[in-house]
Image (cartoon, rainbow, N blue to C red):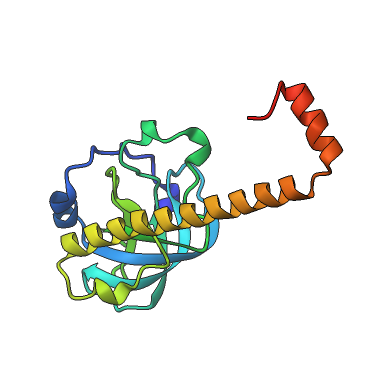
Length: 189
């Protein structure tokens, strides 16, 4: 299994079409539980559910352990404090390669490819039925566009909440405190 594997180098993002060709399986995966990192490995064992297979023959809603590796595109551009991945519950499009089993008796095991972009976070709020039956490339692009749309909507809601809190704070701040704040701030803005 991948826990004892030596760290592999991460290949550059080859483009979506090439990444799909390279993968044995491309799937939408829910991560429910985080397992321990194996000794000497750059992979985490994730208890996951294959929600829908875009390429490959794993049936929908199959539960399995997968070897996940953090392989974002342009990793150096992501601030360190935002480089937290695989926090359950979360959903991803993953590009998986088969792992050769020690014996051919068991079911196949999979791990993410060692290529930038082999794991793409998507929203659990996306309606997957909108993307079923589409070619993998179109489905993935649609899912990523959906993430951007949903996050924009979520940010608008958060901005409204913040504005309401600040308005309520201002209304309930006694006049004397407001006057003192104005005096120390050098005037109202």
